[in-house]
Image 1 (cartoon, chains in turn green, red, orange, blue):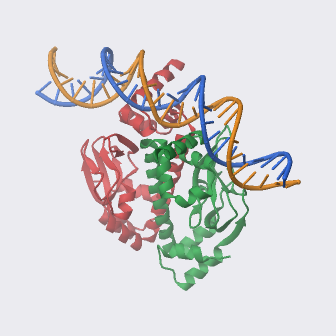
Image 2 (cartoon, helix red, strand yellow):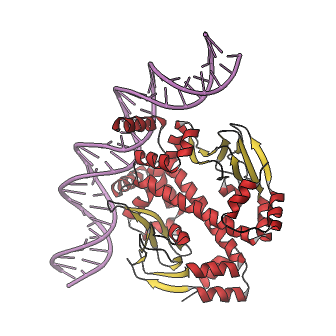
Length: 194
Length: 194
DNA sequence: AAATAATATTAAACTAGTTTAACTTTTATT
DNA sequence: AATAAAAGTTAAACTAGTTTAATATTATTT
């Protein structure tokens, strides 16, 4: 399988010598999951940080009533994991399930720790990536507080046009924090406006 | 002013040699803000990452109608900044305002970059801290989707008992994503139950 | 101590979004 | 091509949380 997408992604942030590239490549595990398969299950320990090479996943929390709350979707060049479980190596709150056949490049927890020590620049890389994730979560939280559902939908549509095509509408509703019926109503309302 | 609280905080995650401590101490700027003063204002570039030594701040976004949406409170041993603005050095989305007289230890953007290069362990420290922030934001977002306002309030109360005492109730309502009137109703309802 | 400003409470009218349930459309399976 | 399963739509009844507005309480200033 192809390590190139991951290396290209990393090289946008830091430079890697050929030796460092080799070291990293050595530690990466490739795996292909089929549609509907779970990469991580709520309650298990998340042992891997996954970089999506192709395909699409949803990260979600199933509450006591069995209701799914979707945290994020990951497509090509995104990460998928339960970060909380990964960094503390304790039971995961989230599931990561494939919505399509999905190819991932995985870092094992211990390998990642040693890699970061051998290549300090990698530590910097992960700091930068996580900072960005933190910032976009903050912005999403604020949008959830300050915008009504319709505008949150329009924002998503505008920001991630490629994702909307690939996922069922009821999952997008869950991501937006509304019911599928209400998203349906919003969409028909938007159609009427034009 | 006292650098000790910051050093203690850092040393929970990484070891620092006396030389490294000195290097770090050199770069830290101390400053005291009065109640109601702004550490960062929406629209400005956030030039500093602030560690709160004493006092309390709120980080909030003011929307087009002037309504405040509180992202977080920071008390002793917490950070306060607009991370998005800090890492990209572009206009801030958030304000950071002091709710009490507040002492902070500040890292300038450029000093922090150089410090991280001189002391690679610091890069690791910040990665760890931000990872935790990311995880707690994810969990908060999920709580906002899956729990009704009353349970979100009880969770906050239980998780941050020290903060509830120090802030006006209408700010807590904003943090929880509800109106002050509704929080008031929730509280009287809780009293009736006991 | 009085006056003012800031914060908190209460209640009635309202609305954004949910629930339930029946129906339609699309996609996958035999 | 027929059947079943999954996804999407519509609409009526409902509810969690908002809005508005008046009042009460607590802190701050003079």
